[in-house]
Length: 488
Image 1 (cartoon, rainbow, N blue to C red):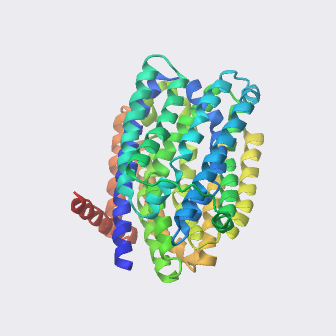
Image 2 (spheres, rainbow, N blue to C red):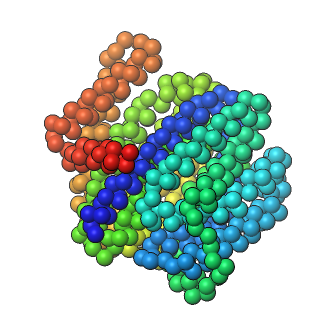
Image 3 (cartoon, rainbow, N blue to C red):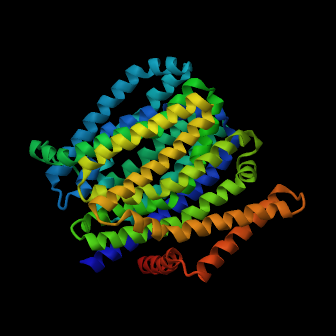
């Protein structure tokens, strides 16, 4: 049983890694092209509407997706009941957005947003048709199919978007991209997954799943409001261009901070659910996943802070230079964000949804106060510093919940992470300080030197001091490669 789960988890991480990093590569290349074809105002329009879309999406899912994965053996009645709930709620949410669209446009003082929201809102209905299929595939560890569908979706949607942007469609090219991103997987899952709902809506199934899913739903709602409130505030009190600069900085930071953690999180939740009654094994899995994520993301985020200016000019052109200070601040938050999910998924998997909701109220209320207070006192940079403080607070509370409910002590977690954190900071300090000893060379030459020095110090220190996280990553990569070779 345990060996079989390990094999499924290894395969899941391998295929999810392919999905995430190949998809990120496509998104990265497309983003470079689109940054030269579209304006900050175009990105700002989409960013202003994000809070409404993600909130509506949370109502559509209702927390039942997590409930279905957490349940050991969901039935066809369970799946069918939640399918019709998702579909009905998506129709209701779309009607609400359609009616409210003019008022939202007036709030932002941008008339075009009414039409944009009414078209983009169709994402909710389309996505509702694929929620059950995607959750089934995750629960069954069929991440290869998800990876293939996701990659095809990325290539097709970005290709169409680039063509439309080149033809001058502006913000509408981004709207079409969002529609294709959900339409293509929906069609693929219905064709390949061979699952169809029964014509039934079971009150018994609904009530059973509602007990867990309701608190997950409330937690998701609060989380999404707090994660997107900054877009609402920036869009309301600043120009669309400023919103665009923020959106580009946030998107670029998220590609790094959540790249590996999203891979792990997708596999972690169903894996944790299988070990929910075996606390020692669960602690061991949490530790390995945490150290593996930290070893890659800690140095990555510090490197991005170091190289931000030449990176943005090289990738996006000087048009996006105003995004750099936003990006550097957000990278500090990204260090904490990369660790949040591992702890969060563990608490969800053992069924502590009510406790998660209670703690979410605490951490998000404080986080919201930090963001709004930062904006009021210091403007947009104060808002971003508030986001950094919120991110670290969330990580600490999530880690505390793992300490309380699972037994992985907070002090032990810090000690496990300490070598990686210290080595990352030392590597950053050496690379940063070295530039002051160099002549006034081209900024790209200095950036390359800093990169090489950082990597040499980090990897050399890992081997010299036998850092545990380095050993875990070194042992894990060949296992994933071997697993992929067997799949071919």
